[in-house]
Length: 82
Image 1 (cartoon, helix red, strand yellow):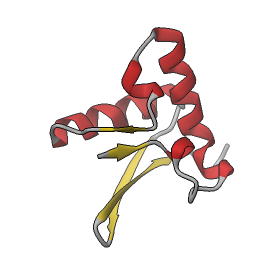
Image 2: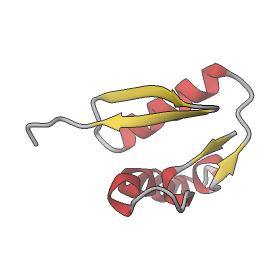
Image 3: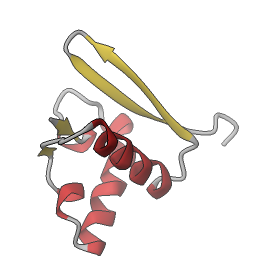
């Protein structure tokens, strides 16, 4: 399962702000899986696909993926100079 930061009550607004931009993009383009808080992830490729969309939509420079117990966490990386 994939949960967007904007949907997770445990994620602070400042950390989820970029995922909200992805949600808005989904609304503009009519892409359901960018607007639904929790979606099924059929493969690792789909995780990469969602991460790439989020990276491009938010002008991030990449993603960092790690796991915390049984949960995988994907964080967007920003340019620290901006």
